[in-house]
Image (cartoon, rainbow, N blue to C red; front, top):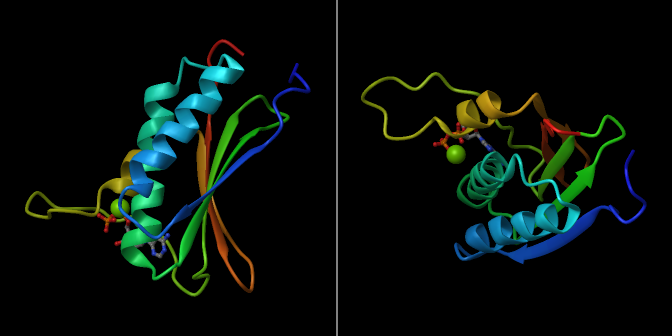
Amino acid sequence: MTSPIELPQVRILRRKLVSVPAARHFVVDVLKDWGTVSMLDDAALVVTELVNNALRHTRTPNVRVIVRRMPSDAIRLIVIDKHPELWPALQSAGPLNSGGRGLALVDAVTKAWGCTRLPWEKHVWADLEVPDA
Ligand SMILES: Nc1ncnc2c1ncn2[C@@H]1O[C@H](COP(=O)(O)OP(=O)(O)O)[C@@H](O)[C@H]1O
Ligand SMILES: [Mg+2]
């Protein structure tokens, strides 16, 4: 059962590269508070890739990060930017490509991920299974 103490946690970060480690520390701290540490490394990887993407591929003035405990017991990480017209696209990076692997990593360590478009922003979300839930 989800404890009532596990309310969604939100952090708004500025358009700065230091926001990437800040987002990672935020997520790790929330999950430690909730006692859901079995997937800490995967959660840190996912939020790193998603915040990096928001900063590198959009001109969003800020990034909103939300950590939610889902009714299914999964942990949902949501990274929000202000550019709904630009869409994340899983790529098949070749051996000579320097990038294009971030979403493939997210896909590999999550049970589901996706993107929800609103008129003024988009939410890139990823669900991590909590093995001992
Ligand atoms: N938040 C985002 N906003 C707009 N485009 C995105 C976003 N995230 C990912 N993308 C698009 O999806 C592509 C694949 O992302 P990714 O696999 O992380 O590779 P990389 O970031 O190295 O290009 C990016 O090149 C970009 O075109
Ligand atoms: Mg990327």
